[in-house]
Length: 89
Image (cartoon, rainbow, N blue to C red; front, top):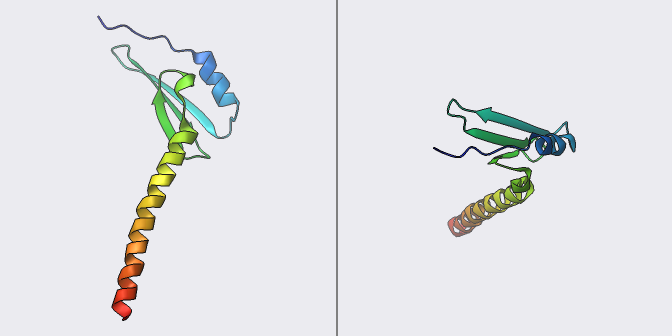
C-alpha cells in the first residue's frame, strides 16, 4: 500500500497570501488519494508541482528558462547576422 503524504495547507495559504493578486495554489486529489499541488505566479508566468512550500523555486526556474531562451535566440540571430553579412558581399 502506498503511503499518502500530508499537505500543509496553511503553509500554501500563507505563501499565496504574500502576493494574493499574483499567486495561485491548486490542490488536486485523485481517486486513488494521490495529491498534487500546483503553484503559479502570474508575474513570473511560471508554475510548478510541489509537495511542500519549501520546494517552491519559481524565480529560479524562471531565471533558468529566460537564460536558456536568451542563449537560444542569441545563437539563432548571431547566426543570421553572419549569414546576412556573407550574403551582402
